[in-house]
Each structure stands twice: as structure tokens, then as C-alpha cells.
Figure 1 (cartoon, rainbow, N blue to C red):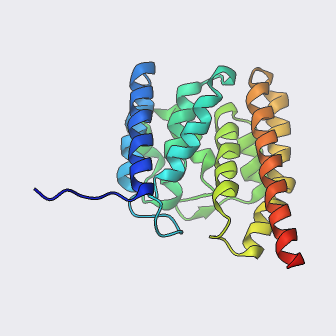
Figure 2 (cartoon, rainbow, N blue to C red):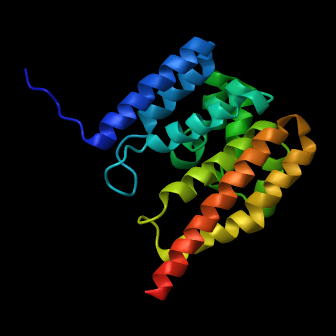
Amino acid sequence: MTRIRLTFVEAKHAKQLAVMRGFLDGRQFYTAADALEFARQLEQGTRKDGKTPKFDHQLSIAQLIITLIPHLMHPEWAVAAAFLHDVMEDHPIEFGDLAERFGDELAEIVWLLSKKSNGITKDYERYFGDLAGCPTASVVKLADRAHNIQTMQGVFSLEKQQAYLREVEDWFFPLGKTARRAFPAQYGAYENLKILLLCQCQLIRCIHEAAEVR
């Protein structure tokens, strides 16, 4: 029998996936577990680095979200939304499809997280304004950007990296501030994500400055 050799990245992803499945089962987060499998089937292939499984993005966001569970109003919805946050934007999945499988509440959260759906692209004012009004979508969006910042070095162009940093300042920090005021029960989650984003952005700026000196 031929054994399939996994790369280090693939083996790490497989282990993280197994741990996540065990965590969700242990917590009886069955809706989130269903969301994991649903999204994983859609997110095939690799990320832009050509080696990391595409679903690693969703899995990594969910891993960050579970560290915030003590501070979340709807923890299972947040984990499930981490898995589903791109499905309407990147695939021919409509609100009704998600509502039928996961319920209207979770489908609404995923719709809020989608910058575009059914050919409609939301302007930033509306998009971030709607996110700030949802305790779950606001946390998932901040965690999503944290993972994007974490993994963009060596993949995104310098200009795109700088644009992402500007968006954090112009849109994501205000999002966190507004949502924190609206949902004080989640204060710890918003503070944690703010500090993480601050540290990540500062690190990227230092890398850019060092590159300029050379």
C-alpha cells in the first residue's frame, strides 16, 4: 500500500484540524462543527503562498476565536462564522442556502461579513457600520484581519501590505471601538484583538523600514 507523504505544512494543518474537531465535539458545538465541514469542502487548494491549505485561513481564525470564548456573547456562532465568513463572497452560496442549513441568525452574520454577494458590493461606510452593530460579526472581522496581517509578509506586494495597514487604522480600529461601546460584555475580546492588531502592524512597519534602510 502506498503511503501519502504530507509536507510539514500539510501535517500541521491536519493536526490542527483534528484538534479543532475534538474541541467542537467536546463543547457540543455541533453547528460550528457542521460549518467547519461545509466550508472545508468549498475551500480546496492552497493559499497564495502555493503551499498552505486554503482552509488554513478559516481554521486559524477559529483558533483565535476560541481563545476569546470567555469574553463572547455567542461563542458558537463566532466559531461557526469564522469557518463560513468567506463562503458567500467567494462561492455561489446564497443567504437562503445558509439559512436552510444553519438558521437565519448565523446566515445573517455571514451576510454581514460578506463585502459582496449576489453581484452587490457594499461601500465601506455601510459595511463597517453594519459590522459594528453585530457582536459576533465585529469580532470575527477583527480576527480575520489579524490573520491576514499575520500571513501577508512575502505574499502581498509592499503596496498592498501598506494598504492593509491603512485600513486597520481607518476602519478596523474604529470598528472595534464602536462595537466595544455597543457590546461592553465583550470588552475583553475587543481589547485582545486591538492589542494583537497594534503589535502586528508595528512589526510590519518595522520590517518595511528595515527594508528601506538596506
